[in-house]
Image 1 (cartoon, each protein chain N blue to C red):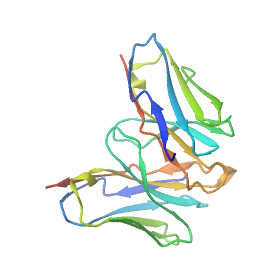
Image 2: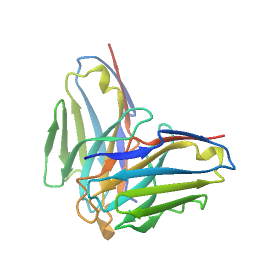
Image 3: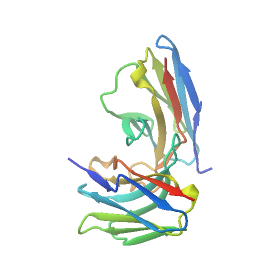
Length: 114
Length: 114
């Protein structure tokens, strides 16, 4: 298995809703990432988990809450989002603390906040 | 600050023609450089990856070159197809801190017309 799987592919949520994005990989990668991408812009790093521990949080608002239950799974919990949070959310994984030959992206979740 | 600059911003070519996309970077130290293809609303897909010691890498009709001295890379697409229409993103990794967090270029939007 050489894929990063993200679910759901599309999500529409109200500003008072609570939802979660899920990401799964079975390549043995020990670093996992959440990125946010607006249209026609490069991905922006949100969080990095290395060996299941949060290693980088790029000053992301607390309405986004990451969770890494185990080395294969990464969640992003969403609560009280704003319309400007609408974007493509990408998960990626890499082999960790070595040159990142295995930096692989998922297909993304298209999030719309109404 | 690490930067990755891509040119042109957009490009329109006819099916069957060749094209070359450029990437200049200031990332230092340098770990590796990757070219990704991203279809609209989808996650980036890796095309090539090169370390500082590699000058060229091919993947089918895609050939990437790297000049680590001038900090320049190019992606050459041969005999373009309609399915090559996408955004092409240059990504350079900096190994400082052991996290290999990449710096993304803004991408070149390629449109292939029949």
